[in-house]
Amino acid sequence: MAHNFYIDTRGLHPTRPTFTEAIIHGMADGGGLFVPNDLPQLSLDDILSLGEKTYAERAAFIYKAFGVDLSDSVVDDLMQQVYGENFTTKDICPIVSLDAQTHMLELWHGPTSAFKDMALQCLPAFFTTSAKQLTEQGKLDHSFMILVATSGDTGTAALEGFKDKEGVRIGVLYPQGGVSDIQFKQMATQAGDNVMVWGVDGNFDDCQTAAKAVFGDDAFAKTLLSNEGVRLSSANSINWGRLLPQVIYYVSSYAVMVREGKVAAGQPIDVCVPTGNFGNILAAWYAKRIGTPIDMLFCASNENRVLTDFINTGTYDISERDFVLTPSPSMDILVSSNLERQLFELTSRNEEAIRGWMDDLRAKRSFRVDVQTFSQLRKHFVADSVDSATCFATIKRVFEKHHYLLDPHTAVAYQATENLRAENPVLVVATAHWAKFGESVYRALHEIAVGEDLPEEIAALSGCELNALIAQETECYNIPDSLAYLDKAELRFTEVIGKDPQGVKNAMLDFVRA
Ligand SMILES: *Cc1c(COP(=O)(O)O)cnc(C)c1O
Image 1: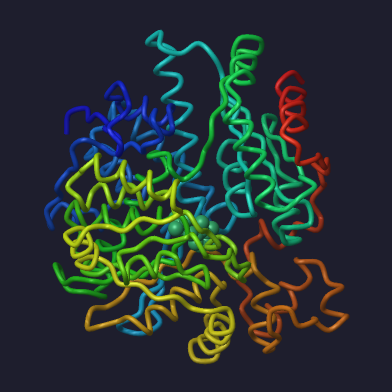
Image 2 (image 1 turned 90 degrees about the horizontal axis):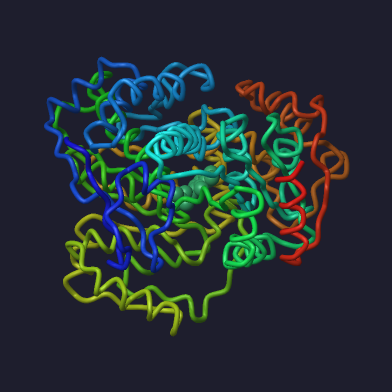
């Protein structure tokens, strides 16, 4: 495809950016999200031929099909760098079949052992390359500071992705005491000369509120740009540069399943995705849209079931919904930002409808789609939610039946699959290694409910020690080195700052000037 350009879901952005410009810009002016104007159409032969290629080659093929404004050789080189040694398997995301109808797509073989790596290894490579190209074209003359508020997974993956990248610094805010021992140590021991990590005296919501206040402060952004030559940016999942890498693994997986004889060429599959911000499942929809033989998309929610209710009723309503903390924290979300892109596509790109619904969501904390859009939604999606007790029971049952350990996010998807499956084989998306959530896995296997005390000798263990114990008990010795040796790594970042936005801004200035 010739160079594609991007449009936005609310029709308010003044220009039609290219891929590199859309990545650097992040969110569209007016609050909308960028989508490519043209979508490629792949034939079954195109898709099946990917099965014979390396993952890096498949990724490069998809990027080119989407018409990115980077030369073919630049795309090829970037993909060789991104999908290489930093994953623990050359398959990058292998598919493990538990039975003929249930195929686990393991997206956790990257450097931080969670699926965010799939996109956050890619985005920084494209981000810095895009920035360089725009600088050479005279369209940019500054460096960047990425600010991320995290409840755990995203921060680590973003740090690992952006570490030592030219022209970018990255700072992460996490709730002090609000992340697991493993997640804390992953961030506090992070390598790289351009990285910074701050614990915030508050909860995740406080971190997000502080980050939003910083992003909303135009005067601060101006000072940062004019005095320090640094533009503030975010790496969150509304950036198109995080979505496209996710489309790749769905197309790639289909080719691999056919090659491995798991499905016949052209036979449709269903896909089940443990869903939070709707990014991962939206990527599966795009994979279907461009030609992958995917039939139904199963949306799996935890107790924060706003998406499941939306798919079942057509009303998205958070007006009286409480935020629930669950053992699958990366799916604890009330406003799923990427749903906006999905609705844009399902309405045949009706920006006026999107503006109306997003206005309703802001004003009334709810919106209701029209009958036609609802029937489109039901054509592609079914949904179910799984509560925390059932999630734990699923981890235990699947271990006993298949000798396969699920993390709590994947367990939600596995159980939703059991509830929703029809005739098609199902690709169940596994989004984290179990050892990232060792405490929950231990509770599940020993039938200790959330909130119930752990035995004292277990509570005293570090995250690494607890994982080692689980590995011994289950004989699942597949803990990645990056998680296994965290206790031995040197703590680099232990600074705790207040949740007041001014404190965050001061800390950022110190970091940028250092
Ligand atoms: C982020 C995340 C999810 C949710 O993905 P979305 O793209 O936000 O829907 C699920 N599981 C894990 C482990 C995650 O880190």
